[in-house]
Image 1 (tube, rainbow, N blue to C red):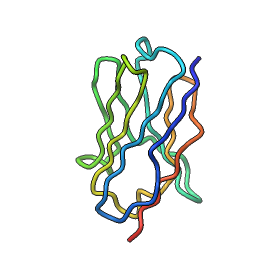
Image 2 (image 1 turned 45 degrees about the horizontal axis):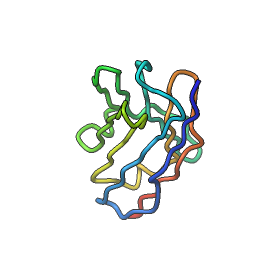
Image 3 (image 1 turned 180 degrees about the horizontal axis):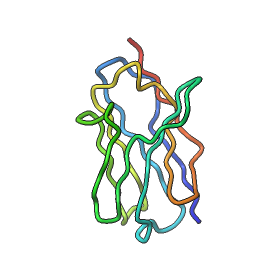
Image 4 (image 1 turned 60 degrees about the vertical axis):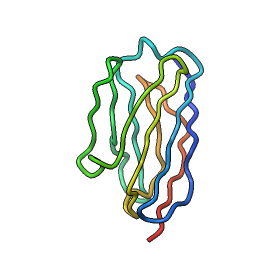
Length: 111
């Protein structure tokens, strides 16, 4: 079990970029799947991106080509680089590993 703390959210104009970070309290080396989820107001939480221990990545269709998930096992940190942001990307973003969740970080994209 690890504690996860997200950071990097904020308010940005459409077309802008943000980089989210998720710092883990312990080693993530042995964690196979690490994920970013998001939840917009009135909507269900959705899986945005996944990265495996080996570096394989998958994305939901709406963010493909704009978002990049990465991890640093040395720093015990998960990242989400978000480019070409759209108003529909507005949500609280959560990192997840196994059964552990961070508290979330708000991303707001203005039009």
